[in-house]
Amino acid sequence: MRGGRRRKSPSKPEVAASAKWPHRRREDARHLLQGHPVVFDTMILTAIVGANRTQMLVQSMSGRARIPDAVAGELRGHSRGEPALTSVMPPPNGSFGQLVKDRQIAQTAHTLQRAWRGAKAISANPKIDRGEAECLAACKVNRNWALFSQDHRAVLEAPKWGIYLYGLPELLMFFAAEGRCLPASAWKIYAGIAGAEVALVCQHWPVDSSSEATFTQCFAVLTAP
Image (cartoon, rainbow, N blue to C red):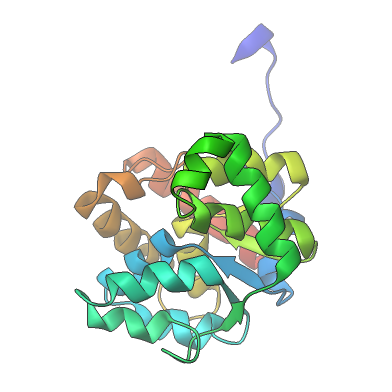
């Protein structure tokens, strides 16, 4: 505790949530709660499919999901080795969500790629970071869209543009809020995914007892009346 100041006991769930969760108030999760469109990156989708939770995702997000063209291309490539990924792909290859293919988004994404990697590198390989760039560009162009990603580019760039950024824990928390699983089960799903692939450990969510307690607190925020 800094400066010797004592905090008052929390009287509402909004105050109780740990400071390491970026969405500490119900208001911060409004894009999830109010049904706004949400953009998905490749990593989040492949993680859910790999954890055999595709049905939860499809039932909860199919009508809201937006899949950038580059992400659809990445999924299409991965599906050659993992056919189950077709269940989280937009038409014409799948039936999940809506494909996002727009000139303004494409141009914005290209500008981001050049800023990140340099014009020469992108000219040599236009696919470098293309999925991440299109995810951010889609939310930048469509200001009421939120983003499900935990790619380091998204973590760095989203706050600059006021983009609401969520990761795997928030998605699983939302599944629990909708009654598709219990909060404890949602945390176990995340822990299982993170344990199988360390790259999927969210910045604010290491797999430990402290984070599990925070997850429970934040679920209370999300579901508070």
